[in-house]
Length: 206
Image (cartoon, rainbow, N blue to C red; front, side):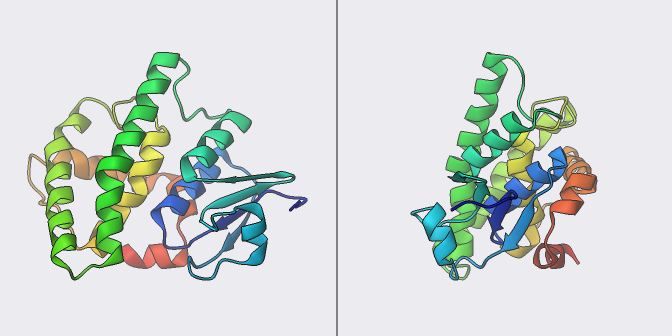
């Protein structure tokens, strides 16, 4: 499949598509975004991505899928502003945090979304809530996740935190959690984040 312009096939409600949309907005990339529901994947997408998963990015002759691969490609193809640190050690650390976020938290969210009314989902809600409360204090040191600058790690966290009301998770507004709540405000106020939101995502916090 070849397209004359860059195209992102994106699920308008999925956190994995959302993180890629944030990167595109942060970079100011001109891109055609086609909203596709996860259960309505087209032949065109299957031609580009044998797994039929979203997001899928098509850039002329290149087709990419798996959100982390797409995010890193965009960061390297459009280097300003950089969303990964310059130095190898710091870059590796950022990649490791993204890996841990996916392994520890994305799985919990996927469990809640898949079957929200089950005991398994309730246990996942409790675990995610407790994890967020526990890490709140790290945001007293730096404005973003373990960084002075907005990075791909924040691009992964922002869609998850935006979806908390939808997931049935309410954070307490107390001194312990205040640094996390302020971090969320910083993320959500970024022009790139606002630009990245679909109409369906806006409704989550309407």
